[in-house]
Image 1: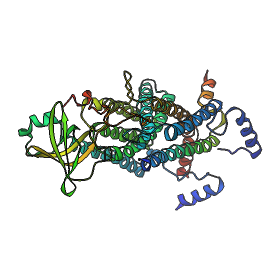
Image 2: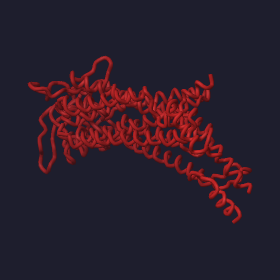
Image 3: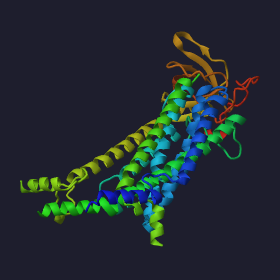
Image 4: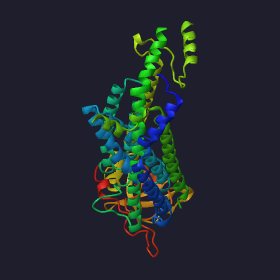
Length: 259
Length: 50
Length: 180
């Protein structure tokens, strides 16, 4: 743990700036980031200004341009990545897939939270209640708790390998509940309407459908940008824990105890 | 009708995504400074091994 | 106290960057009593929250959910149990005395009169809209205490010249009501 001389330090960081910068950005994420911002601004324009109000829900319908895309991204994309990452981690102990599973789950929980909040705000003026223990609402709430639990398990203080393995098991088990979320509107009666995007026939008018699809694309791009950055942060955390600080810390603490 | 629900909904989403992004980028910067240059990126690490 | 002294000296010598360098005995491995309590607390909280959500859901699921025709068929079996009834409003709702709303709902050619006493439904409530009412049979009438508007998955733009209301888009989807 010899600290390098200041001049050497400065030289090293100048060198690092060329190869690995002191942040989690890169050329590709900057392109993706600009694209995400452009899409976000156009989504806001379409969702809040250009589209007409819905015939019966009026303006509260605009919440669905956020609600449906966030739900699709979190439930179908983010947690699917977590599932795949968890399975591969359990089979191959790949750090990459473990970290990617965690990164996708974290952004997925964020999007699922947005799904729940926008859904509740839409439900009040439409149904008459913010919340009802309807099959789809309940199974979605269960998903939120399960994946929040997955994130909490990843932060538990224990042996990193055991922790990753337990998280992976939870990442797989939690996905089973998503099947219930998906089919809840068909299996049971409830308040929630059916699939908004049915491949066979979508019951939505032109510009509204366009805005909804724009929302889905936008949220996917935002998600991709967030997950890449989150993965890089997770990678840095892993490096800081595994290779560097944790080992050094244990050594120094052991030194201290031997005095 | 309904703007009193729409505006909080979009605001909450914006604050959630924006706040999350900011703290994530900040954490990325802080950690980058603590991790040796050759270990900062997953791809660089992989290139080393091959 | 010697531990503490050596620690202070140690701390003064080198910059520990604010890290926890409190000496621990490596022989006993990680003595992390406090931290394991933290783990138990986190996992316990999650299990409790999950349990509460499932409990709420199952309690709510015990209230049966019938379509109008089924509710009429099984009227004798249901007795005065609370249940949810689903149907489409087929006549102009009338405001009764002391804030009650009286209207007729129908499903599969079966009709029932609903007398709603309680919080007013949302502005979407009108002729042609599917609703879910919670309450019980009061003779031939359904006495509702919670009246929710069920929205279908068809969304119609409010374009100029379109007479949106009552254009037949508010049918209760067969796939949603097909299973008990």
